[in-house]
Length: 403
Image 1 (cartoon, rainbow, N blue to C red):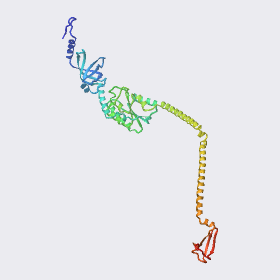
Image 2: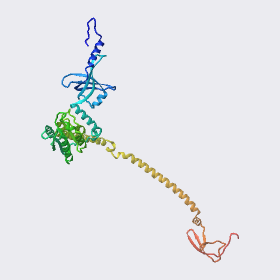
Image 3: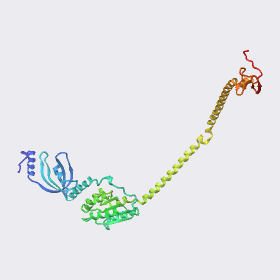
Image 4: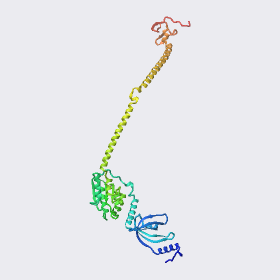
């Protein structure tokens, strides 16, 4: 509908915007191909996207629902999509917008969505867990290399490895692109894993398109890398290329050139490190000897070492004092015991018959029995015991004290 207007008879803005909205609403739905450059998810029903044309610098804002986004699956920014859009005019602001009624991932975006779903599945099984990662040997006896025959990746790994260290390689050539590549790499990985002298395995390939690197995101290959007993280094493509075996490998190298720096040490660096360590050990030993020498000199200046006998002087004097006190105490004890003994001896002697005999008395016995005046018989032989001997006597008469 054509509207007439003039400066004298202008049309109301709301009516004009409403007419435009009505006209745009009759345009219907249309499928478009585009690239997702921004996703703004909200906690409510309406979600926001920004789509950009794949060939020209043209972009637009798109509203949709959480259901449409969830139906599309994993949708990282940069994905190529085809969308069923319906143009709308928001009458309140007069702005043109598009409503997305259906959204499908297409082209590389579809592949990225599939790979992301596969990654999340394998990650949920624990194949990418950090505790499964094994450390690389410091100096491998033999390096297993899986790569394309005569490829730049093979030359880069070997050249840069030999530049750092004279290494020995066990090389398995196989396809690194196409439908048979995954199975050949898995077979080569099994052979190298069973090799008794191979200490590390490198899977190397140069850069390429997303489709060219798909074999290295094959689920079977990822599982084979995760189950490998020998540490595996993934060196596929460039820094921006991240196939799924990068997550399962023990070490990810961004390029085949970097893989060389991860699997062997640098000879010149290690020699310099050894020389530096040797010098540090020498300096530490000399420092320790110097410190011990100073400690020994300090010990030698101490009085106990300068004059060892001086420490005994006080003890000698104390020992002499204790010896004198011991002798004095012993002498006092002997004197006291001697006096007690003499006293007891005097008592004993006073009570002894010998003392009585010494005063001039005599003891008369006949056989073993003592003789008294009452028991003596005239003519009886008796023995008189005196202080200095014995006398043989004969009884000639008896007299008792009574009469």
